[in-house]
Image (cartoon, rainbow, N blue to C red; front, side, top):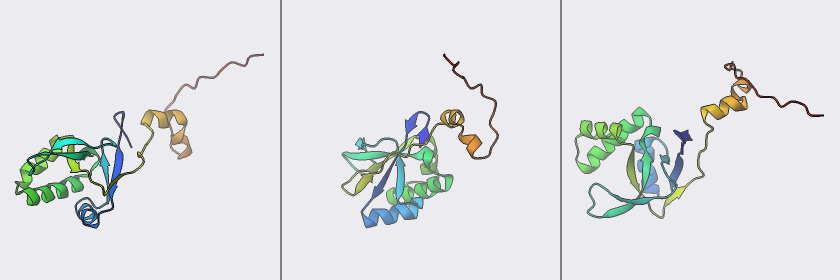
Length: 140
């Protein structure tokens, strides 16, 4: 996906337990992350840094963020409302990396400007705004 000039990458897991948690919390076993490589991060409940991906919270639906807040509040004994507010204000949340996590190909989506210039809107049957198309003069 194309988001403010950044690519959003997707990760999935081969671990059945983690996959079941992701399906329960997010409704999918594929999660959007900000980068294709994990980085060292401090995580709640751990006294040491962990190699983790940055979950792209802006790519989650409201229902997914609410379920994720419920999951985090139960897991760490936090207040649900405080957790939900935190998820709505931060850009990302660490998801521990592991041998079971696989980065899928970047889900690239053309920017709205690229779609407009490519004539994508016309092919889908929608009207597009007037755009002057530069034409080269014939050279003889």
